[in-house]
Length: 147
Image 1 (cartoon, helix red, strand yellow):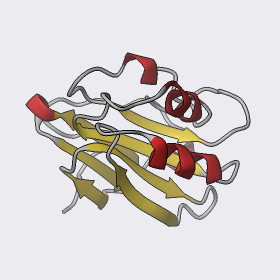
Image 2 (cartoon, helix red, strand yellow; image 1 turned 90 degrees about the vertical axis):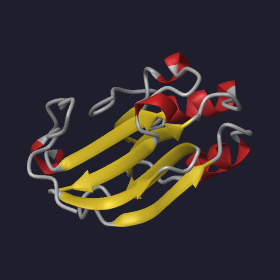
Image 3 (cartoon, rainbow, N blue to C red; image 1 turned 180 degrees about the vertical axis):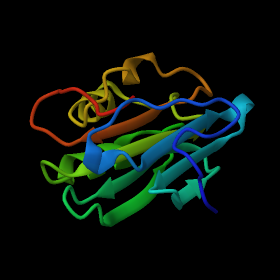
């Protein structure tokens, strides 16, 4: 699959990103909006899933090499996500996208760890809603590149 323009879809949306991240696109669609999470880099699809929960794609900051892409079933519980986010190296890029339902089992600790990746709106995630983040792991809550 190829994405012609970032945000090029039925409902276009793109935040201004730093030059080295301009080709990164994360799309999230909750259950009633398409039930899918997609991750794009420079027009190429990196990963897509319709699996329930919050999908994380971790990238090295300079090379943007993919370290991991995994869906965590945060509908059931967020302990596996918490363990993973706790182990991410400071400075690594974190992309997140929700599909189906990702909020029911989301703990306050998981929300705090997402905040360390730049997630400021994660507390607003609702039942079967969308959520997308382009952030960077830090030692204190910070600003996302896009959310």
